[in-house]
Image (cartoon, rainbow, N blue to C red; front, side, top):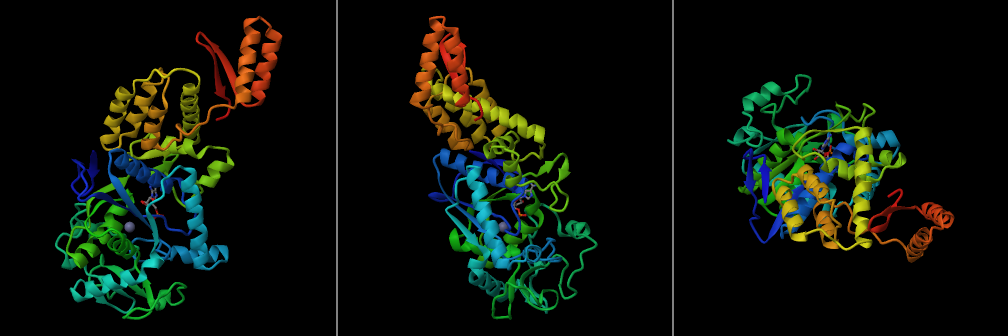
Length: 454
Ligand code: AMP
Ligand code: ZN
C-alpha cells in the first residue's frame, strides 16, 4: 500500500513496523459539535483504517479527546475554548465536554465510522503528561516561568522537520498580534503546563503538579496518550493539514526529546473542507454540523459519499448542490445493490477486486475507486462485491435487506395481471407498491423494483 508521508513529502510504500499497525489520530475538541470539516477528517481516518484492514493488517487505532480546553490560538494565547463553551451554555466545563463527546460518538456512528480501539480523554492522562514534563525538565528541554513551563525549542536541532520550515522562517511568519510571555526564551517555545495564575487564575480544570497547580498545554496530551497506549515509534499519525505547523511539530518535539525515538514513521494529513469557497468559521455562520444535515433530511451516508468524491489530499468545497448530487449517487448505488435480490450476479468479482484495490492501495484514491464502481454498474453485483466496497468505503451497501415477501407477492401479482393484459389491476397494484415505497420498472428481463426514497 502506498501512502503520502508528510515527513518525507513523498508517496512511500507502507508496511507496519510490528505485528499490528499502530495508528493514532488527533481527535475532537469537545466544546462544540464537530463541523463538517472535522467530519471530513473523521471520514479520512476511517477510510485509512478500513483500507489498512482490507490490506490484511490488524490495526490498533487510538484517538484522544481534547477535553482540557485548548486555547483559541495555537500560540498558547487567547481564550480557552472549553471555558468559553461552558460560559455560553451555563454549564461546567466537565458537562460541556461530556455532552459534546456523546454527540461526537452519535454523529460518527451515523456516518458509519468504525470505533477506535480506545478513545482516551486528555483528562484521563494527566499523570502521564506530568511524567513527560518531569523527563523534559531533567533532560534540559523544558524550563519553568511564572505563567507556565515551556518547551525550549532551541534545544532540538531538527525542530520543524515536519514542515521543512526553518525556524527563522517560522518566526517571520508568526502572527504580530500574538502577545507572548516575556519570560519565554524564544517566541516559539510552547507551554507544557500552565499555572492557574494571571489570565488563568479562574480556570475550572486544574490539577496539582510538582511545580504547582495548573493544567497541561494541549500538544502534550497526544504525546502522553501515544506513549501510554501505543509506544513509540507508532506507524501512522494522522490529522488535518492545519496541525502540521504547530500541533504535530510540537508533539514530535516533546516526544522525541523525552523518549529519544521517532514519534511516528508516517504522518498523514487531510486537506481542508471549505463551504462555498470560504473557510469554515465557527462565528461565520457556515459551521455546518451533522444535526444541520439531518434537519434538512439528508442521509449522513450521502455526506460520507460526498467526502469520498475528493482525494483526502485535495482541498474540497461543500455546497448543497454537491450534497444533492451525492444523495442521487447514493440512491443510484443502493438501487444497484438491490439488483442482487432480483437477478443472477454478472459481476466478475476477481476483476472487480483488482480494479478497486488499485486506487485504494494507491494513497486512498477514493475518487478513482468511485469511478471503478460506476464502470461496473452495468453488471449485477454479488454480496461479496458489495462487502468489498463497504470494507473500503463504509457505505453500507452490503447490509441492505431484500424487500418483504408481501411486496414480492404484490410484484408477482402485478406481473401476472400485466401479462394477462389486465392493465387496470396491474396499475392498482403498481399504486399499492408505490405507497409502500417501491417502484417497479418493466425490463426485457422482467419486472425490476427500486425503493423510492432510499
Ligand atoms: P479540532 O476539533 O479543531 O481539533 O479539529 C479536529 C480535526 O479536524 C483536526 O484534525 C483538524 O485538523 C480537522 N479539521 C478542522 N477543520 C477542518 C476543515 N475545515 N476541513 C478538514 N479538516 C478539518
Ligand atoms: Zn494531537
